[in-house]
Length: 488
Ligand code: PLP
Image (tube, rainbow, N blue to C red):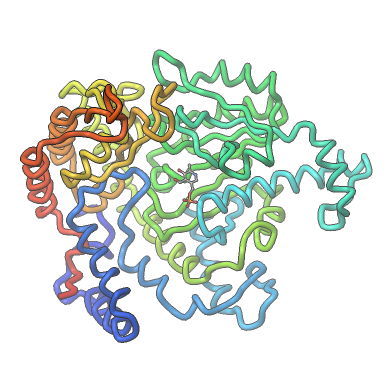
């Protein structure tokens, strides 16, 4: 536990324990079922082997920063320029969160209002379009400032934006729905094309991407992923974007903690290379649920119009929690945490490979591992359900060119940010690899009602599930979660 922030280290007379017990008492007096659900969530999280790559455990300081009076303030606008009176404390928290974000990531500008990662991406899309509208070239062509545009101007502009295109990573290669795919508004706002990975190595193919960009000439080139287990070279990405006149947007939602902890540096740090960077704050960064946008000075004023253009009023209590999380991320211990996340992912990958599992790209360089479970004769959905029965929480995920589509999938995505926060290390990762392999090897596809094999249902002997669940519980018992908090 030596490398964890003090907020999650054991403490007998824990102020957090007193705070939560008292808080739950206050809630219980109004609606006991809510107090019970909150308390039960802590028990569930303590008992589960949480391998969901996008989840973490925020510190009590981060969590407590969200439950207070800041929540009651409306604060549309930006620091010092609000549409509501009485925002001096909101100005303090937003100002501090933005200052920490600029320092931690070395960014010129930070906008900390987005309520989630999707919202941060919407702010970024809007900012890029808005900046293009206000470009001198368009102004010279008679297009006025965006705030003054009439409906007809917008229609003319949409027609003029023959180049309203987005090039993003394919979903089955690890991209995210918000990178131009149909179920998200980005897939309707933009004509989209995807870039994939090399069919043999599973790695990003920058030459193919460059050729595609030259042909497609996107307005926005999006880099970043939800399920790619390797590093992305953002210097090359920027070269490609510049060559075709695109804006490079990097969505670092998954790996922001590795950037903050200086594990991803040089070509692999998106901030010096991208025009605009978006992120969530709750995954590897270990903050509250929320989003953030970082950008250079040329985009700052457009980004700052996120609310009310695409966002509702800011959530001051969450911005306060972002400031607390970023303060934690600015400490040297966070670098140790980020390095441990990657070491643990590598150990997990090696443990799985040694036991014969097939991994997309053959391993990992970041915080996540993608297991191709077809070698076990399973779909991702069956594997996910079987692992859950054995107390191991993961999520199914497509693999490149997935024959089972996005619903059943052929993959299981696992990640180490949460268990690393809890203090587990490489030895435990090897043990966990063994537990995962035991469950997957002991699971088979159930017969389908119309003959053949089901893609949805599985068979796992109860004795195997129980044994693994017991082993997982024993393992976790050595790494208590929030050891200073006792709700009894
Ligand atoms: N971007 C990426 C790369 C993600 O992986 C995710 C969430 O999984 C998001 C954006 C969306 O984040 P949120 O759920 O906070 O909207």
